[in-house]
Length: 224
Image (cartoon, rainbow, N blue to C red):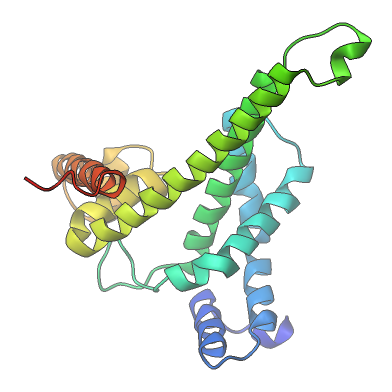
């Protein structure tokens, strides 16, 4: 890791991107980069744990690895180094990664909560035997998980369209819903706009996203 200590996060990310573009192995700089963010990732996981009142210290390493996997599989291609909130300004790859960590933790504890709520109470030896009803319920849970994954994919597709067609609204939506800002006042301060404009942009973004999602689910819905 010492060879990369003098590089900033953005410079290290650019190096990873350059190596990937040339078809070379980016493992060394990539490993150094994500290792820098390990402690911050743990903080994010603990915040989500506190929110859901679930999890343990052992989850931090697992969720960190899950976030690294998602960064490698999709995130490296999705991050363009430009701030969505402030067009023309550089974005932070660390903030982008921590957002991945946050969503990985939220998904994990949501699934955990649903599984716990689905387990029926019992008091005999047969508790370890799955009844047809329990098996059917497990299948249903699996289907619901697949539907959630599809819904998340549709959401990010719609959000990418919002960024292209309405960047100001996308920036406000991202700041308010993706970056853990407490309220519209914090959102407005980050974006350099008034609180009223923050409300308006987020509201318009919600309307656009609703329409985009409807068009994705029902392709002919926008036709007269």
